[in-house]
Length: 537
Image (cartoon, rainbow, N blue to C red; front, side, top):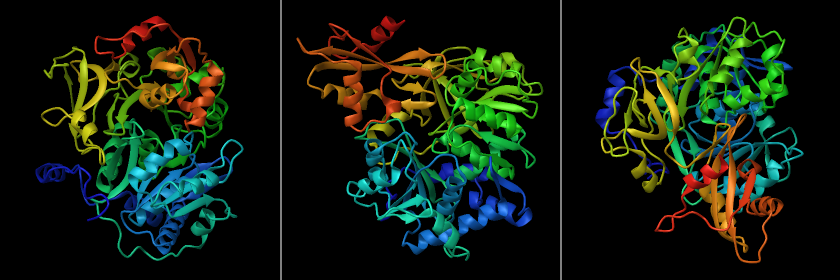
């Protein structure tokens, strides 16, 4: 029995249907990279402010790393965690791991040991790749500490020439690995990634993705945005987020330039838009709103941009319109995707702004959507309910999480997205809210439960509830409501110190604290979060 024999899989008849329809074939992403390296080795694949990396160099470096990983004793199906920004080493690591048949487990850059430990344990990671120590985060030290907490973790690879004691130099492995072709490459049905979505630390929600599904999504989605080898694509979301990773896949499939922006800041974003001369830009609403609010996109040359495609959270129409006003030759549109469904909708590029700025568009080939009531009835045009989806990219289920799987699908097998939406007569989907109690902070989904449980552990706190509050830039931020023991105190600084001590990354800390006398509850003592949200409004 292998590690992932227990992972959910599609039924044989479903697999046959996807194959016969042409959604799935025998291609994998490393095939696309090798193909460009053979046909156009000098074509630029990865571009940073100070260097270009060709497809030939990209492929050769990835192959050397794949052989080096095998030389460490890693094998097909082994999980390799990664916590790196959008730099060439990330992409080389991604392709290197997939060439040798490994499973890449992505970890967001703001995560610290407290967030990564349950994820690496859930995936039973054998190795982890990270940056060198930075002023705000000593990643190698964190990963070495995790070796004592993750029983399967054997190797820490650090992106530096001189790796700290107890770690290995990723840079040297990329430079010195063998150049031989992989003797036992992965099969299309093998897993290539495990990406974690919202879930508590006790029960992570890991989505396994096969090689065929990732490759198929790149092949089928690229024509929706007219992407070709002549494009220069800027991907603002991190590659540790599925949105960013899937956009990187599009670049590998089409053979276009992947214009890298390591970590988002409004200044870095604006600089790449202006000086990188992209033709297509993938952004979250927060990227756009922050840069516009700072005045960084005023009176600058953005004439290279054909399309800015916004996703990750619902984009306010005013934000899309304000961006489009600054694009002399460009359009702003939206797509819809999730860890569980991949890239599955796109606003028609030639549609008017009334469609591109207000909806997430129509389902792409091989995907169907419907709206369901709380009672499970299928609703008609314009009716609001929960968005449900089916098709070739929809996940089979979460790894080793039966409870989450039981809630994720309808009785007839459609995935329940947790989003409230409507579908118009043309098939355009408009997201109107969320069913689930998640906070969407700049495209990163934050589950309040872990925070609430940690706060409840504080001696002064009797009840705790985290709810979303609107924010013009991030979309949503978090507000913590608490009730206290009589005579006790609990201030904002005490809250942040308490959460830091419990290993929570700053990105998960509530930005506001409200102390109230009584928590609104149902007769069964369940907190009524809707009343708390109303108080904020």
